Length: 102
Image (tube, rainbow, N blue to C red):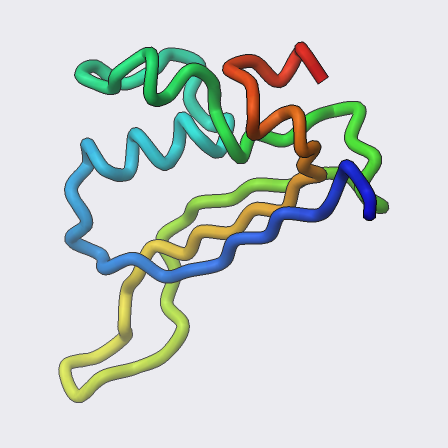
């Protein structure tokens, strides 16, 4: 059994997702430098899906959150937040409070 593995996330969020929720997601994806206000430092010690520039994942880690139109409804284009991330996870990364301890 390996002690590292690929972690992948892909989902759509409604266009009206609250900005505070998007900011937490942006922070976990490494798209915001500062932890959003009100986010517990003990529970959220570090961004969990932020790309590592030295990743061992072929092609490297990636993270994205963008407003997109994947289709249409009776009212017109469907607008949603598309979120995707691929990172190389380490078992010790998830068991400690800092990715630098891996």
